[in-house]
Image (cartoon, rainbow, N blue to C red; front, side, top):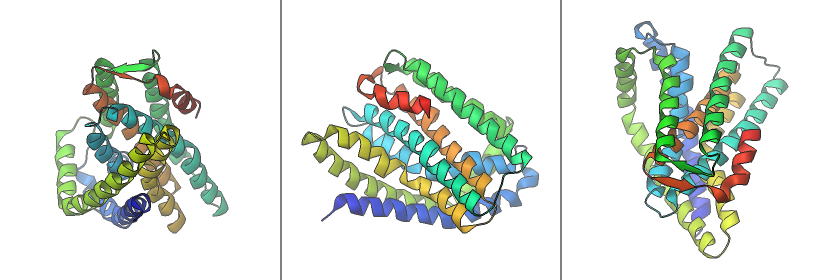
Length: 277
């Protein structure tokens, strides 16, 4: 009777499943740490953790692309995702850490600064790409390459690392399939309801609710991680930054590769706000 509420519940439920399962990711990566050329913590916080929180972004992106305005909605939704993550969720994680009396040590601070630097640079590159209020296929390729360049620091160009991570993901494939089904059903319910709102003339509400309900909800996962476990601020913050890096440049880059040109004239206000945040 209420598709919006049901879809939201399914995505929040999946986020809680990811919270329970994240320890398995961590244990498996740490158990194989001696076989990894890359940094085990980086692989967890920059790849596996963000992969969990950005899974709805991927599922929505490749289902929405079939729509005539799908590419535009994917871009605005991922921009909204990053704006909310960098303001609301980073703020709450730091506030909870302050209340609990937890602080980041110097090493954690340096690592986070590097993560933020990449996010800032990739955001600037995205802003330059859309300066003329559109994004082309060539610019999408540049954004996609930008993401994989950042991943080179995680793997240090070792092919065996990729095989090892793939092995871990295959072991958890049943979990990913189950979570994907929940997210897909939840996304379809929400998108269907929001499309009705858009057809009824509530386009502003449509564009605001879309990132709010579909893409930002999985960011509850690192927030819950911070609340429930001691000294998890660094992992939670790295997970948030990693999630933003999956949204921009990766997802927007890939989606832009499917279209010769995507107009972003209507989204200029939201994109300017993203640059500010």
